[in-house]
Amino acid sequence: MFLDEALLSVRAGDGGDGCVSFRREKYAPRGGPDGGDGGRGGSVIFRADPGLSTLTDIARRSLYAAACGRRGGGANRSGRAGEDLILAVPIGTVVRETMEGLEPKVGPILGELIRPDERLLVARGGKGGRGNQAFATSTRQAPRFAEDGQPGESRKVYLELKLLADVGLIGLPNAGKSTLLSRISAATPKIADYPFTTLHPNLGIVDLGGYRRLVVADIPGLIEGAHEGLGLGIEFLRHIERTRVLVHLISSEAVLEAPDPRAAVFLLAERFRTIEGELASYSGQLARKPRSIAISKVDLLPPEARDALARSLAEAIDRPVRAISGATGEGLVELLREVDEKVAAAKADSRETP
Image (cartoon, rainbow, N blue to C red):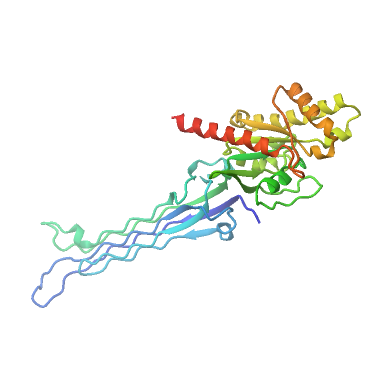
C-alpha cells in the first residue's frame, strides 16, 4: 500500500511543576528553601528516514504525544526532562499546520524534510516551573510557592509526501510508463492493458554504469482536467514538482485508430498538448522543466513507419521526438543517454542558482 498523505495530531509534553521544599537538617534549623525546578517537557520532532518510502506507518495512529517533564524535588533536585518523541517520515515529506476553516492542504508550511536524517521540530515541550529556591531574596527568605510547568504545544499537522526523483515518466493512461520503468530498472510495477493500472507512483533506479544512476518515478496517468481534480493525476502532480527532467510518453496505439497517417500525427499531437496543458495549468514550474518526448509501443507499428512517425510528430509539435519500445528495448539506450545529459545539466544549474 502506498500512502502519500496523513493528518495527525501532535502534542508535546508539559513541563514539570517546581517544588516547594525547605532544608530540614539537624544542625540547620533555618536551612531555607531548596525546592528544585521541574523538568522540561518532551518535544515532537519529525526525522527524514531514507529507509521509508510511504507514510503508511505513521498514519496508523491519529495522535502522538511526547512525555511530560517530572516535578522538581527537595534538596534542589530538578525533575527529569520528558523524552522527545522522534517520528520517522520519508524523505520528501512536507509538513503543514492545519488551520480552522482551511483545507489541510493549504495550511502554512512548517517545513520540508528533503535530506537524510534532517529534523523538524513541530511541537515544543513546555518549560519546567521554577522551584521555591529560585524565588528567595534578601527580603523574602522563605517563599512558600513555586512555579507551575508550562503546557507543551499542541497542533494538528498535515503530512504530504513528494517523491524525490531525477526523472518523472508522464503521459496519458496506458502510455507504457510502467513497462518502460520495468525495462530500464529492477522495479516491478503492475502492468495491464487497461487505463489507470498504476494507482500510485513507483520508483526505479537505472544503473547507467560508471557509478552513474538515475532515480525514475512512474507517475499515474494524467487526463484532461487533472489540475482541477479529475482522474488520479491531481493527487500525484505534486511528485513531478521535484523531478529534474520529465519523459513524456505518447502511445503509438493512437495510430491504429486513425484513418490515415496525417490524422494519426494530428491525434498524437493533440494527446501531447493535453498533457502539456495540464502541467502548465497546475504549475508554471512544471511547464519549464526540461523534458524528453518519445512515442512508445512502436513495436506495434511496421519498422519503416516508426522513424517517419517520430519525424512527423516532431514537426507538428516543434520538439525532438524519439521512437521507443519498452517491450523490445528499441531506442531505450539513446533515450537514457539523452535523459542522463539533461539531468546532469539540471543538477549543474541548481548548483549555480543562488
